[in-house]
Length: 292
Image (cartoon, rainbow, N blue to C red; front, top):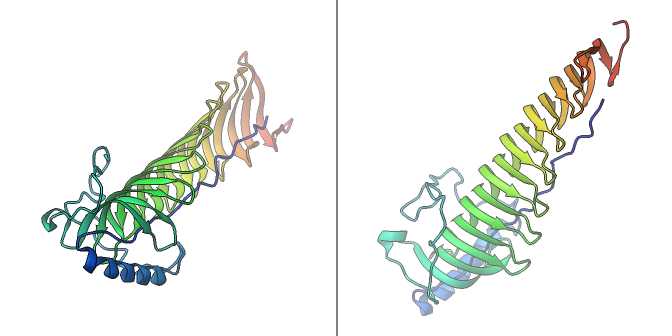
């Protein structure tokens, strides 16, 4: 009675950000920004795994830019009418400026067009902003911190996937919703880019899992509803039935008991559609042990 289980673990495209220059005092600022950005790019080593030249444990609420704290709505936040716009320090902090449609190069070498708040001292996005990347057309709109996606944001990827939710230094981390181009949806918690904690995973054929995830896999307690209406409810390990659980098939059969590697294994009882008991006892690899 084993059931082929679909594995929801799919590599989720993830990308990083962009930044560079702005405008306030063109003669003064352009040279400063160029030098600052080159220095930042070198310090990050040109990869996502490089060292981070700032304190990752800093307070992430910052100031009145709306960075992260309570910033769960992006509509109407990034209007502009061309050119760099200097904004008063009382609004964005002494080291902040709004730019519009600026071509920026981030610490990892990705180039794109950015509209939003940057740090004057480094040219990096820092606050609320939107970037359209040149290499594959992916976009990110939301909170930034030192050129990295951090806080609440929305990302649309070149392959048609999208994500809306919380980021922590470029990784999906916190509450979020990831939608695949083929219609699959995960809505729940993430830890370091992986599904981890409570969540809901829906397949395009209507199958649905609601429960616990660990490191991207169904693990803990959860309920999986088949596309035909049957269901399994119980314990999971590494994406398979394991421990105690019950499975009800669409034809009316049911099994309640122990599972291992997705199969009935241990003590359990199977009932037929008319309610009669087919076997109450030991099972090994989905097979009843008669006389047990």
